[in-house]
Length: 97
Picture (cartoon, helix red, strand yellow):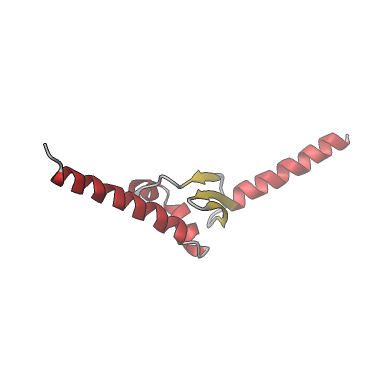
């Protein structure tokens, strides 16, 4: 009986965390970001390789990150994506073909 109660309490706690928080993996670690609306979307998100199109499809996550004052999670990924695009463009222009 005690295992059942422990399982119920653990499950309820995990469901509460999943409903109220995003767990975001960024370039420099894992962050817990409060959700704006309580639902089960984007519980765990790895944003290390996110580009602008990815953020476009995850607007509630981006808004929650901005609201929690953790904007550096957004800046790292979009800036690195932009840098990769510019580097590819420059290499394409100056390559010896």
